[in-house]
Length: 339
Ligand code: SF4
Image (cartoon, rainbow, N blue to C red; front, side, top):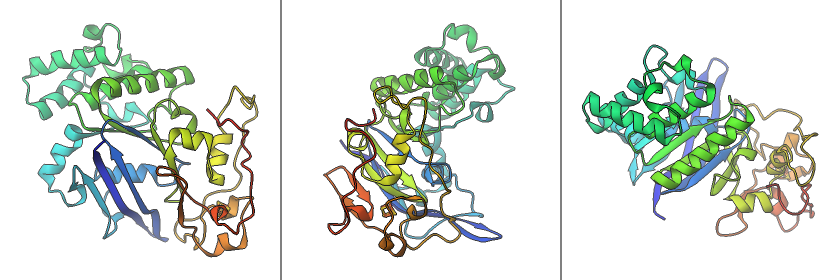
């Protein structure tokens, strides 16, 4: 599959009174056409900053995308695009949905009109045609009575329906890439599952590539083809979804997986919770950023950053435990993975 997005050595800082916060510290990854890539990690790990950088939504100042960073969309660097190219890109070629649709939807405008506006801007249809398209989109995202619902305001929609409406707006212009930033966090578990099913379904039907940003590994298992785990502004493990669930190798990924409820091991009642906090990115540690919270940490971990080790063509991890001289450590997860 062809690469549609290539992020190369992305570094993003924020200048604050206390100093420079290095939120993203050299992140590189690709997104292929028609695939779903999940970026997973705790809040503050740099996943949302990465997604905002892709949309060129980092406000400068205080934000600062560092020299040497590249974000190529179909080979063209988004970071060097002129305003008119950016306008075309946002919404037309790359769309984004956020955690809380209420902050993105206009409370004073009917839902159908909001979808139609986006269609008119990017597809040049008349307002009547665009409104008809908007109703079609509401049907595609499984909103019942779409004709009637199109004439309602956001407050007349439930949380799950508002998120569906946001997805309809995001997909109305048939973008190449959809970035979904914690799209289900504000929703209850049943609705979360429905929204994830919907996104998978839409990807199958429309072929949109998706970057799914989440703190919850549990929601990505059935949706993403690949997963990359971020910690402290870095990618610490990446691989195909099966590789991450059946053969995770980074202690942080182990911790994330232990906090996912599993029916097969019965850990659904007592979930693992990771102690401590991520490092202060005003002064990032020289060694492994996870060292202060890692029960397997060795002296080298605090002194030197581990290099990325390839475990397969698609799976790699940055951890000193992969060094041939390191002690053999068994994954705390039971055999069989965490799916
Ligand atoms: Fe733990 Fe060391 Fe691996 Fe970091 S490099 S995750 S501290 S074992």
